[in-house]
Amino acid sequence: MNKIQDLYFALLRAAIYQTECPAIPELNEKDWAALIRLALRQGTGPLVFDLMLMHDCPGLTREMTEFIKGTTAHTMLLQEQQRRVMRQASEALRAGEIEPVLMKGLTLARRYPKPYLRASGDVDLFVGKGNYHLGAKILRETFPDAPRFDTEEEYFRHYNINVGPVPVEMHRVSRSFAHPRDAKYYDKLEALGLDGQRVLVHDGEDTYYEPEAKFNVLFVFLHSWEHFVTETPSLRQLTDLALLLRQNSEAELTNYLKKNLSRLHVKDAWQLYAYILVHYLRLPEDKCPLYTARVKDRAELLLQQILFGERPQKQDKGNAPKNVILRKLYTFITRTRDAREIAKYCPSYARHMVITDIAQSWDRFLKGQNTRHWE
Figure 1 (tube, rainbow, N blue to C red):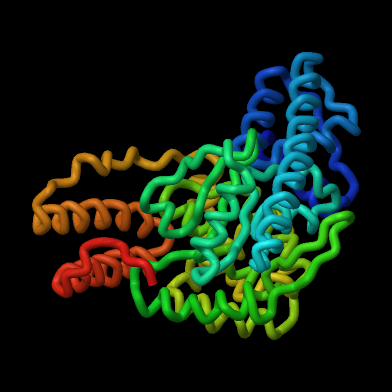
Figure 2 (figure 1 turned 180 degrees about the vertical axis):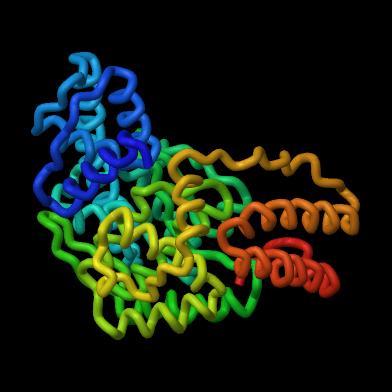
């Protein structure tokens, strides 16, 4: 870690835990620009910038000060717009006898000392498979001028529209898996976490359901790990996990994660995150289930990938051959290449990608199941 990265983490920890601000050294314009870029790339700009604005930052130019003020103000304004759209969508769904569960951004923001500084991209509502088509009809009628922006593959998971500057995702499933056994197992967890044991929240003038606490930790991690497998996650997602874990440190959570992370083949991946949470976000070890220092080298490599890495450019899907057999071979080659990249950090999950996911792809081919199907 260099001095810019050390200062960034110190500011981030002070912001999320509301501890004393660290001494801010005098930096030149180039160094301040590097810190600002790092905070923005990690999705934590508003948090870090708010702290900077409350303290003397020697060397920070007036132009930079105005920029970070604008970034913080934009985040606050956008979250207000997201809340308004969330209320409209939720009320419309309830009027249609569908009770949505609010997920991700806005529910995680309330864990922050200053919720309005948690940058969020969209509004995520879970309605389940049975309510999905009716829910999509209700949203189309509620926001008739809102364009859809999803692909056929995305539509399998969620219905997407843009309400002004606010993307809305109405989910039929919270997470999809290539392996049918994994999908069936996760469906049971989802049914409990997002329906049977969901939590009613009173948040200011808003009242809504959010995921059950243990499931929420699992879901937030799985969502972040999916980002890593397909692109790159951000420290904002790890910050979300740190704040969730600070509030849920019971032995019951440890047992829940130990069982379900192993069953979903991501226990080793979780331990990489746990190392970063403990050593860089200073989450106490007793608050971080399944922490181990044995993964240090791979966790440090993962952190560098999160901070500065760029994934190799994926091949255009349009390049896939039309012949079914050749397309399967193309998929195998592509997934093997992706797995080699993942194996640098989590070999067990890379093996799962190749052995399990590709095998299941061929199994579906032999059974004639060559397209997505609705349950």
